[in-house]
Image (cartoon, rainbow, N blue to C red; front, side, top):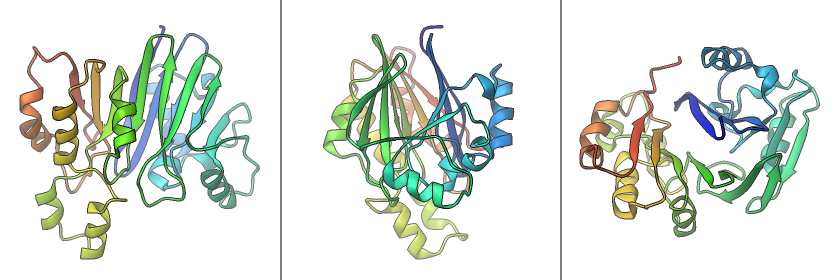
Length: 253
């Protein structure tokens, strides 16, 4: 197992991914309770005691709600930038084993080379990550209202891409649960990426580096797998050089 990745769960209600290399096992975001994270790990044959570190993208609960429970695990190391760490620590009395990095920097953790970069979202200092191990690479990019040019360049050079495809614009407009200001926030430049925006980026970039793309962080109310399949049908043919997997938001509830 040289470089193994799987999404434990992803939707607008919770997000977490597991990345394993020969010398380390990490979680990317923990947007479920600590107990739920442990259950999800067990479902894929892993144990929280074998996890070395957690990398957080930002402070919103669907990416960080497991911090309180998991901070009881004293062996875990928590990586975040200062604004994210300060906010999350202010909500928890127990001291957390923080490892603070500056957004935009590259650093190493065990056998992983890590690049952090700023993304446009309505959080204190939200980041995306690129994780590299030898020739293998993965980008985790969720929660962004649009894809800036610099981010496009970075995530077009990886083997595995986890990209947000949060909402279908028609379903969001028709949704009765969300007031108009919330809809405007979601559609804004510091909100979330629509299916159409994700499709436009992938179809026009079509990077030769990509081998697999996960479409993640789908809204349970304002999106569904079938709508994405219909939109992305030109890219789902077997002859395409990269595969696309759509993460069902109703799984791993």
